[in-house]
Amino acid sequence: MPPLIDPMLKQGRSRSGPAGALAFFVAGLVIGLGLVSNLGAQFIVGLIILAVLCLGLLMLARLAENTRNRVTAGEASYRAFFDHAVDGIFRTTPDGHYLAVNQALADIYGYHNPDALIAGLTDIGAQLYVEHGRREEFRALMQANDMVTNFVSEIHHRAGHRIWISENARAVRDWSGELLCYEGTVEDVTEKFEQDRALRVALRQAEIANKMKAAFLAAMSHELKTPLNAVLGFSEIIRDEILGPVGQDAYRDYAGDIHKSGSRLLAIINDVLDVSRLEGGLLTIDARPENVLDLAEQAIRLARGITQDQRRIEVDVPGDMPSLLVDPRRISQALGNLIANAVKFTPEAGEVRLAVARSADGGVLLTVSDTGIGMAPETIAAALEPFRQVDGSLARRFEGTGLGLSISKALAELHGGSLSVQSAVGEGTTVTIALPPTRICAGPGMARVA
Image (cartoon, rainbow, N blue to C red; front, side, top):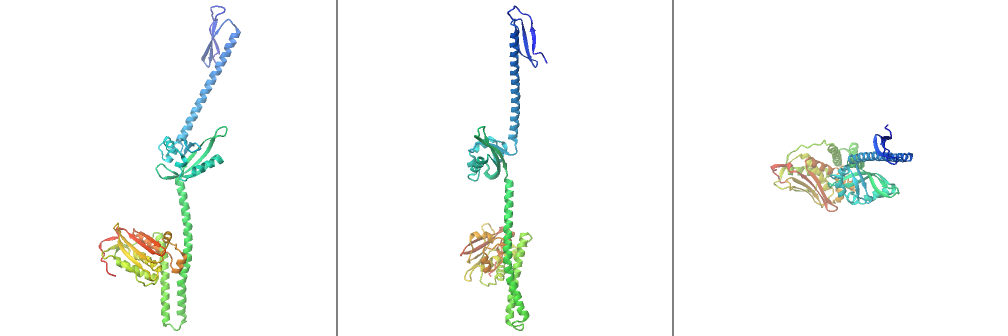
């Protein structure tokens, strides 16, 4: 290490004048120059003290510079983390104004940059949250705990749609405990929230389906036991010749009842099998040109077989109606179910009508209407679902599995069409199957007079 004091001049002009000079070095640098006079040792001591003070100042200056460098490096590191974090980071005033945000938060909310977000969202409570009062809930949690975790909310995205976010934040206070601001992070949890919600809906639907199937099975126990008891009872009468030798007129009546009950059982089984095939996507259609009046006649025969009711069904088909490219068995089944329902819920003095007309888009409308008891509009959606019955008491009073309407809807959709229902209690029901223009054959279908 170089000497602290290095003589530079040793000669002087007089006894009282300068006799020489001393240079003061620290780490090889000249930090001062002192003159040595004839005042002797006291002057030398003063110069040494001055040199020590200078050395201390230099050390403090270097310490301050090192501290500034470390602070600058720390700030740069924090800024890099702030700017490039995956999650959104924010600092807000307690009353809901952004003080600082990072690019990730701007991206989540749909803004180009942090400045645009701060300028655009000037009132978090009024502008950001979908649910009114959500910001007040956030502040209440902050006041109670000085922090919030996993604060999930639905917010308005700048593009106009809604997203879900999760916030984690803490309160920042000064040395006296006074609240300065809130700071925290934001994560876009829209996808996770939607997945969770879809799972909850699926579980709820599964629970409803299980309840519906349980109710359906309970109804089926009645629907199956009634005709089975008739089959067994009447067959025992015939077998044991309780009414006398076989050949009596009563036996023919009983045989007719057995056939009726057997047909009803077969219809129930076919309905259940059709629902199963429709739900499994196993039922297909075999489309071919078919005259509309032929479809109407087949549907009426099917309905009469289901209801055992021979009342007149009004049919309204224009003479120039083209043939339809459909599966005649399935369309007749769909219409037959609708006519059977109309007959079942319409008094003898009421009217049941099947009307066919062209739709505005060039397709065809197959409409079954009645003047029966009708149903409340809010129950229509349930009536269209399989294994659902609008009213259990009505089902028992009028009999039936409650599958006909849902089967008709599914068969219409298999043809690329749709089924809609309009009804009101006490005013009757109108059910329309709308088929697309692709189901119309070129040229008239040679409609005949029924």
